[in-house]
Image (cartoon, rainbow, N blue to C red):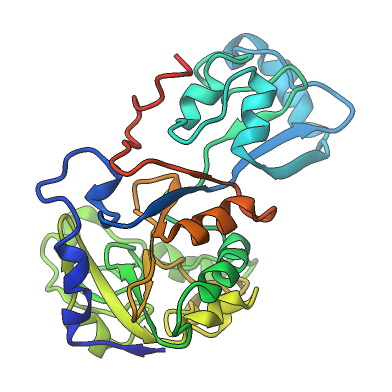
Amino acid sequence: MDWVSDNTAGAWLRDRIDEPWRGTMHDVSPRGFPAYARIFHPGFRDRPVDQPWPPLPYRSHEREWEAFQHSAPEIDTENVTWTETARAHGTQMHSEAQWQRLVAPGVIVEHEDKPRDSDGWRYSSPMLGELDPGVLSHLARDLAAHTSIPHDGFVALWEGWGDLVGHLGVTPSRVFYSVTDDDRHNEMLARSISSPIDDAFRKPRWQPGILADEVSRGGRLNLPGRDYVLFRGDISGFTDANWFENVPWRDLEAESAGFAPSAHSPSLVWPADHSWALTSEVDFDSTILAGSSELIRAVCANPDIEALPIAEGSSLQWDADEINQ
């Protein structure tokens, strides 16, 4: 997959995205397709094994919480679908559901902790702006089957991810910390932490990102409200469960620091024949797919993807859920 410095290939999207934004999914997803699907990013839940959470509020039960932490309890953790979440909290899943409306009427604890259900599961919100790598690989198989040219397409990444592109600044995009008993190493780390006072007098220097400096300094795909780095290549490669090992924005620096292979999920994907368009907006907890009716039916029927058809012009704002009040 190659970087595209001439971003005119995305001009067709600009004509179909609302400007100014109107508070609908078409602030980021193109209008004019026969059908649409909302792909729900998985949530997350956890609970102690064979025991309940200590009572709340924390301040009134500090001893119980200290004993709980000291016992190093085993904690069950798992991804959870929106449908499972709604079932656990007695709410209704639908295409314009909002996560906080699904969990809010359930067994809620004090504001200092996350919502819980009657079985003790504690719920955390889905990831914003990133489609789970495994879900993307399942989805890509349906996408590849509904374009005449799966080997020729475009992938765009929002430039605002803090580690993606280089920038002029006094500190790097990120720092990887490690735990060690080496006093010299710890002293070095202490000295490397930035000082807000001293930073004001430092001369900005180029701080590299994940992408090559040429890409960081190069052109962008400019769409209403968002700018992206654009690539062109074989979009059928996302059908591989390990697609993140084969993209030019693979985070090799993080891997060198001991982290597992990873890469940002694409913000936009479309084939060269414009038969569909996939949008993972940075502020959305779900991804919007625009395409043919056949594609939308296939994706919504895929057991490895949680997706529902959604009407053109729908809103995904926090108050769009009119069923779960």
